[in-house]
Image 1: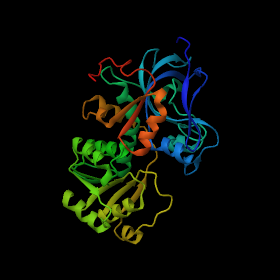
Image 2 (image 1 turned 60 degrees about the horizontal axis):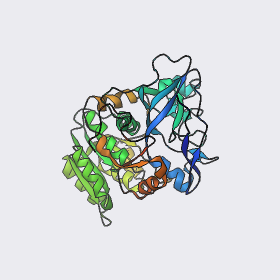
Image 3 (image 1 turned 90 degrees about the horizontal axis):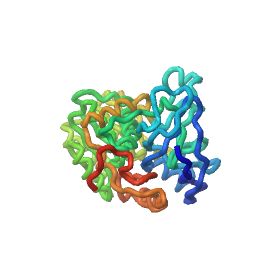
Image 4 (image 1 turned 30 degrees about the vertical axis):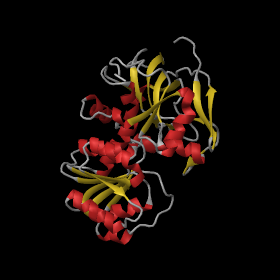
Length: 363
């Protein structure tokens, strides 16, 4: 690897984002050093930038943002045998400590001492170079683009949410929120066998609902300011032909959770995916009396292989999820666009777009 500079998007506090030079890392025995190709902006990145974090993950030091990335292997640790210099990889940014009780039962995604980026203790990978455990790097087939590799991170969230909701063949599924996570949940739900799907978002997000239509959703609902909960339940049932079997709630909002319960059949299942309101009031007597299971999900759990297969097989074209492209030098504008909800997925390119794609884009 020729010596180069390593610039990174570093958040120091609310609305304090800086482009800074960091040392180029060296790999540990079980790591690889990656030259990052592209990095998508996630809602958690925006929380760190706008509010200084979320929940228990509040800033305690400046950190590098970004975790939806793909890159090219530039250095290989001494014990790494399955990757070589030049390999193009999708990067799973969550790794457990590998020794605690949670990791030993496979729940590395919620390990308290793991290397999860971006968190208050661990830098993200919106930087030119990044070191990651080699077994968290998934080699991509030649026909996949680097952007598709970066999109595996949110898609893996959708796959895990679908597994936690136990979506089965023939299920009717509601998805609240047509942002990037809601849209990948739609992709995952359909891949798992959902036959009727409905996705809801606010009226001003109609551009996102249009993307959902292109992805094959059965119906969309643009929520108006005067819509009541029962109005939404009625519209959902009209599209699905009755109550839902499963719900993926991706907004974290109280209204979304309340309607999820009301619109679900007896013995249905709801997975809470989105991080939103800290405290909510829910119709729990309704949920309990109808035996509605409510579960949650955090990150993903051994879901990258399935996410890669969904993309590599050609089952769905995820590239249209990327609505805006920015170079790292324009990272402030990229975050402005993402914060305002002007697009779908905002992609930051750490190298000129198409540099590492065997099959080139036409645009």
